[in-house]
Image (cartoon, rainbow, N blue to C red; front, side, top):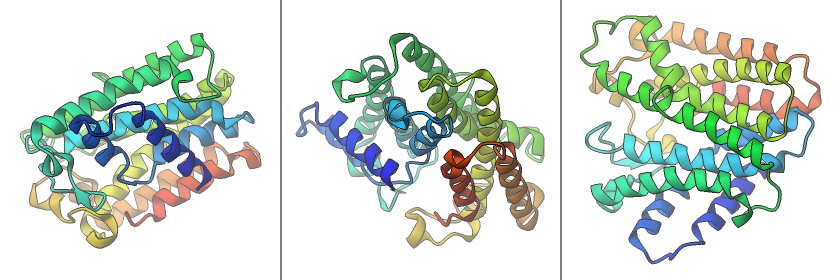
Length: 292
């Protein structure tokens, strides 16, 4: 909870740099401060902590990653994509405001995220050196872009007409890009922020790859079994929209077994880490047991 609250406080500080009465800022605030698990920024700081360093150094990149994640949710919810009315129990950005404002709010969150990494002194007291910041911008922008999340979203949209609709390999590729790359980038960003060694970063990336895929498998399961009151969004939309999902391809029970195996493997990957990795283990267990 400490890390989650730190992220919320600093995201609010970032938005407070701007005119709160401006519709664009109101829309950004509506989506960015709507709550949520803050999984990615918490993962980033937990990775820094596992490297036995002050995790506050990873806070600027952590907040930037949450801004990028929120932009992706705003755009995902648009009528041209998933066409959702609810997000985190609140009206989606385009429902609260309008489509044009929602698009621009997403764009603003994405672009300002990199400004926060490059000039963290605007808000943060502790931050990485300039060379590390450049490295972070390179890694996060690649994970969010053409070779990462955006490509995954494109493949997901095209899956309706794909010849590989029943291919588990293709589905894994979609989600490794769409969801997994930013989760992995979050963990890597935490380690890079504190200048971790290459071997440590390699193990953390393996851990992150596995929990990232598990996260999506559980998401697919919750879309069938989840409680909409707890989740704050519509349940059953995947089947209604005939989306490619793990339960649709391998069945619900096998999906649950697969998610558990991924989490078990992720925890085993960091078994040699000491008690500083307890938060990473806790996050892995949270992913498999979450209800929203």
